[in-house]
Length: 167
Image (cartoon, rainbow, N blue to C red):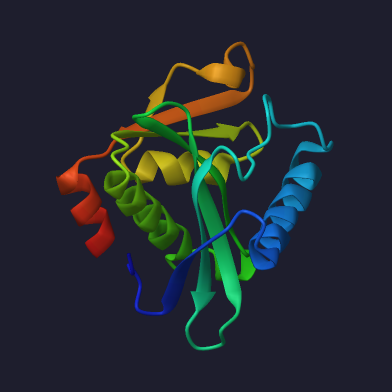
């Protein structure tokens, strides 16, 4: 699952305190970007519907630098939830490494399609998904009818999982 020699990416439980702190930091940043705390349509992810949750640690300092998870939508599809990288590490490949690890996990669990959503205040997230091989798709699930919501999808197979794991 390791995709970046500077990182140690570990599977943790949803309730892991480091993961919880990173998710809280992400939500605080999104609250500020959107100007409100009510910016996520549908149910929030939880331990029950999260297939895997990862935390990335900097190998040099041992500090956590990012996280991400997969929420099962059905037996073949998962949605990326809470993909977040601390601001000071952005642009250094941490998000791409977490995404590659999530794709490898998806493949290992038999998931063949991963989806993602980014809102109007997340141009960086929209660009990230577009540059990571995701196609923009019609809004799905709780995002249907949400005007400033952008949805993405990517097929996962042995080639894409192996390619992203080596990136």
